[in-house]
Amino acid sequence: MSFADRYRDPERGDFHLLTLLRDVAILIVALIVLRIIWPFYSVPTGSRGVVTQFGKIVGIEQEGLAVLPPWRKLSVFNIRAESATIENADGATSDTQPVRVSLTVRYSIEPNRVAEVFEKYSHDGDLSSYVQTAAQEIFKAVTARYTAPDLIGQRAAVSSDIYAALSQKLKLYGAQVVNIDMRNFSFSESYMSAINEKVTQEQLRLGAENKLKTVEAEQKQKVAVAEAEANALRARADGEAYANLKVAQAQAEALRVQNAALAQNKDVLELRRIEVEKVKAERWDGKLPQAIYGSAPIPFLNVGK
Image 1 (spheres, rainbow, N blue to C red):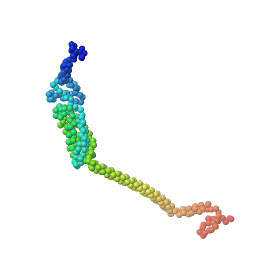
Image 2: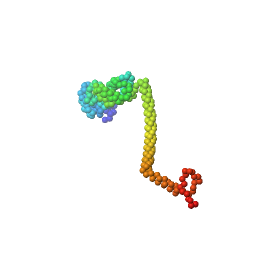
Image 3: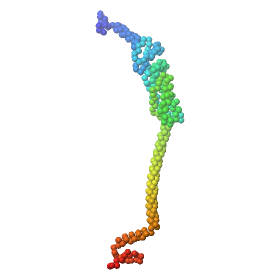
Image 4: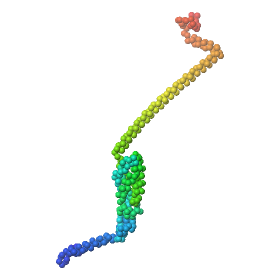
């Protein structure tokens, strides 16, 4: 039977609107009832199912399929890591310098405290408002323990202190801190200008010290070279003086030996004179000198000519 035939009077051919409305109403009621008494639920990965009965928590379902009676309700509760962002959190250092920073805190609900968080703080695991308030409070408390220079130079220690204090704070809400990112760390413009000026002066000072060290090193090098050259000259002079001394000592020793020999045998001197005269005679060419002085010796005369 077609849709038209079902709701049309076969005798008069009229369309039975009331019958149609009745059937539609029956279908809607059936769907509502089915929805109410539907027993099958699904708990997604990274979530827990909070089971309530007339508003009271009666159980926690794990990930997967959950079958519940109609008088119980299942609420999906997220336990995956969530993030809360705090823009321009402000504080003051121990030396009264205002400071600002932007924080991103990643956190997650402790699985064994889902029922507590659901009952007291959040029905879906979103604690961002609590985390933002706690992070702002912790940042003020931590920065007050540091001076401005220490806050800049010990940023890792500051981050560690914030992490420890915020972890302790969020335990009250059944959450745990995964990690904290700090960015846009800034002070007042006047303080930043003073820091820049100080850095510039420090760089100039270091440059001057390095230049002075370079000059001192060059001077030390020149002194070392001069000392080495002086030592070389001194060593050379000492060597020459020593050599001259040894030559003089050798000559003196030779004269002493000769004098000793002459003193012991006076014929040696005469023998030397005869040897000298012999050499002169052997070298004479037979010509008499043109000018003869009174003291000039004549070795011999050739009277045969």
